[in-house]
Length: 177
Image (tube, rainbow, N blue to C red; front, side):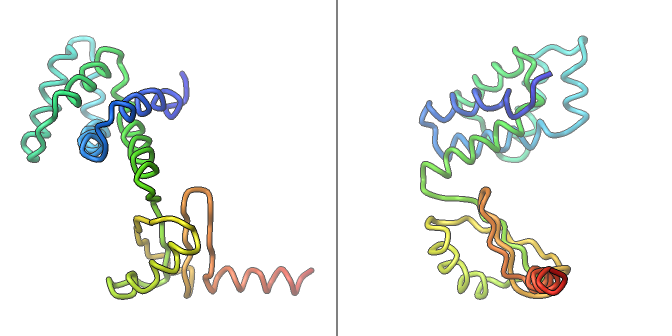
């Protein structure tokens, strides 16, 4: 079977071209969260359960969470179910999010820190990171005590590692060379 990201790409690009923007991306992200459930996917794979029943179940779960699907999102979900691509929905949501963020000039940033960063510390470091990477960032902070101190920032395929752990590894390499 083809790689899930390969299957997801045309769907994400087609959704992006519809111009639904962030609102549609948020609905697809909600759909992706529901579709990530293993029990739902198992149910959807059953030959005894039709696509309409799976659609109704997903719509009901989202309605209980307060999400009402637009007609565009409903049509998209029907298309996925008809083509047996429910398992690709979380990846479609991720790729669509990246496309919308890129259009808006945003990039996701994974900021790893040895200690939890409060809002003030994050607000202080974020402008410097945005200047360094040359674009607006949507930060996600992850605590990694192995860093000892400093930060490790990952934006797409770019990495900025100013952690104590990285500096110690550089010193070790220099001393053993």
